[in-house]
Image 1 (cartoon, rainbow, N blue to C red):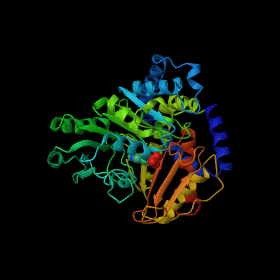
Image 2 (image 1 turned 90 degrees about the vertical axis):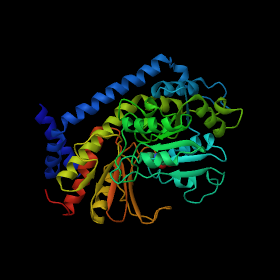
Image 3 (image 1 turned 180 degrees about the vertical axis):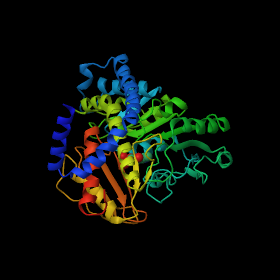
Image 4 (image 1 turned 180 degrees about the horizontal axis):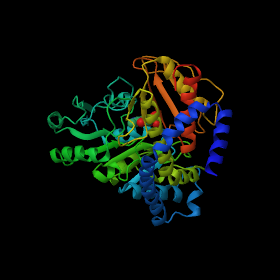
Amino acid sequence: MSELIKNETKKIYEEMGIPSKVYDFCDEIWDSLQDRFDKIREVSEFNQAKVLKAMQENKVSEACLLGTTGYGYNDIGRDKLEEVYASIFHTEDALVRPQITCGTHALALALMSNLRPGDELLAPAGKPYDTLEEVIGIRESKGSLKEYGVSYRQVDLLPDGSFDYENIEKAINEKTKLVTIQRSKGYQTRPTFSVEKIGELIAFVKSKKSDVIVMVDNCYGEFVQTIEPSDVGADMVVGSLIKNPGGGLAPIGGYIAGKKECVENAAYRLTSPGLGKEVGASLGILPQFYQGLFLAPNVTANALMGAVFAANIYEKLGFSVLPNGTEDRFDIIQAITFNDPKLLTSFCEGIQYAAPVDSYVTPEPWDMPGYDSQVIMAAGAFVSGSSIELSADGPLREPYSVFFQGGLTWQHVKYGIMKTLAVMYEKGLVTL
Ligand SMILES: *Cc1c(COP(=O)(O)O)cnc(C)c1O
């Protein structure tokens, strides 16, 4: 029976551009990864229970799905959703809004609302995400923290990737008000930090200055482990709803979960002093926010399975992959280094051709604002720019690395990765 289905699947894949040789090569690797997949499923089972428990204990009701217009006073669904987020992250409060337009906005909001002129922001684990450079004022920008008199200090990681405790201690001073730590590596080559490791850094920082606010950029990390940074001392965790916690359904949005005072500051900044969380209509978006959150642990698990699959395929073909095929994962991003522009381009073509939307277009490298080289991006997503959906991008420069992430179902990521290899195979760039 199983053989029969497999042959049918192989046949439909062949019609969808996966040569038999590519399928056999990939499917053998897929089969060999079942123990890894079991571990990922174990974590997702825990997180599914955590999310469900939070929804049940907060008594989410049908009325919560309705939403409001205008000012949005007494939007019970919006307020309840924020309680659900606070339960999941074990925080005092949360702000979860469609008015938070993206991850960068959520992070900027958390920073700008909790820092005052004369305060200092410290990044103790190296440079934050690219888009935050203008928020902080590392790159000059209108309205940056720097313009408002907030100074910035950064301590880089040691060459072996560990925290430079000696210099972190030296960097903490009477002005240090807020410490920012990024969980995921983003587009850097350092490894992603585990929540446990982030906990060690938080403990150290707080032992030197107990009243400092610690914010963690949680993008791409939600539901990858059974604990979140807020379980190990972070005062705020911040992320985007078009990544993991939106489960692929949220069409916009960001969240800040944390201490009551931190969240209140953020709410006052998002809307207005005095109004805070009381206004902000949810319009018709709450069903997607709730249902997306409900699906998020499973979606994250599917994306992780795809990332592990890709790492093992390209490692077997001799490319350098980060994380490697066997190590533990703390976010959903997979980097593959091709050292060849043709392979990078082919990979992105494969991801695009595998998409449910815009599968017939070919991605081209383009001059993206803020980058010093051309960038190629592949995304055929239901939600524009969503990177919890299968997507890939890479700058057209040495060492020609691709960063790939997402996938709402494991079946789709599996097909997508096979498709990347099929494109290379048919161009004669790899031999199997
Ligand atoms: C995606 C991301 C951001 C920014 O989110 P946008 O939604 O793209 O603005 C910030 N930090 C990290 C680590 C990210 O992965």
